[in-house]
Image 1: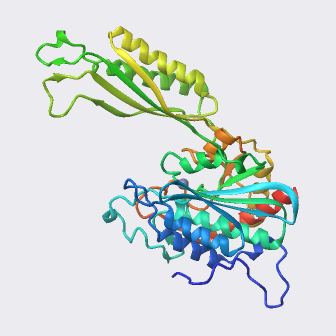
Image 2: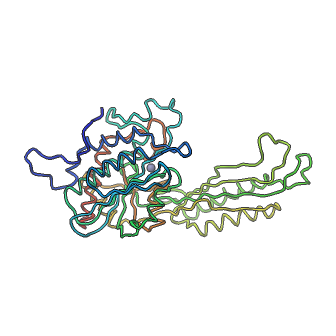
Image 3: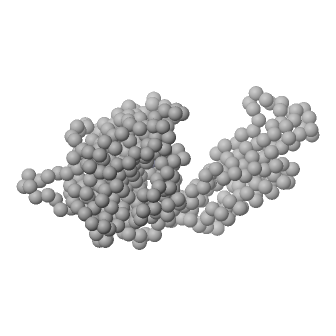
Length: 417
Ligand SMILES: [Zn+2]
């Protein structure tokens, strides 16, 4: 079942008296209609120079403009726009931002799906298709929440940001974080990623590291004429595993984020057709996932020292490059945006909120790192369904999230939590 209602966010009671609470202005069918329309748009970055987020950005910009919002569309690259709306309240006050991303990961092998990956339909109460959870459901919910808050009236400023390239290098979040708007006094950000309704104030950090061991190329029959960089990867891998174990032991698992990890993801040396050639370079790539107790600067020193010591012992050169550095995010649980969200969850869901952690990184990581914004991640959809085949999201959870977002915003603006 899908609906074809217009994007009206309000339910006007027959009696004529408008609901006073923004959350009660949310029309679940309208939220789900927008989510369905977004899921049907394939916003995957899998071909160079082809549009990615463009169709979703066009749809959202159109919806936002139809509300009379001040909308800015900025291209990160051709076909890859950020869409940002600013909504002023009736008086000055705090600024709250809702954030989501419009790209999705590939559907992969569609034969692995039991339905069309871009169905965007609702079956047995679940919105189905790539992005249903991560995170077109969340996008639809935040936009309708903002509309409901605007219609109910508020003092302050709302920013609604639908950004590009979260699944890639987060170019959209990086550009937003560098913008004047990010530095114009944003007091809190709700990142609407799927976290199964948990309030996530912490997110793991990530380091992507490239280590190249450099030897001397030679004929396989005459190894003494060269210097083979491959064997040194053995002790390096063992040493990294030992360093991971020691650090895991010394810092212990984080209550919400779990363990710190050093994971080798790429090993490359030589060519498959060149069995008789000792290669000059052996390459290792690491995906390191950190917790607040493993700050990046001393950790990088440990990793680099280990890599260089083993290279020195083997008489090899060593290149150690940090490809990406995203520190863990830790927003205090007593930050206004967190308190307002927790109070809203209690009010709308009728249960104590569960506080959790984000195992990966989100745009919130970049907004926190580059612009110092206080971010909290909360949204509809399971944490683990993202990026899998048969992605779906409980439709009722999407509508509930919209209500929680609206309530959180009202409480945030009113200082009521
Ligand atoms: Zn996501």
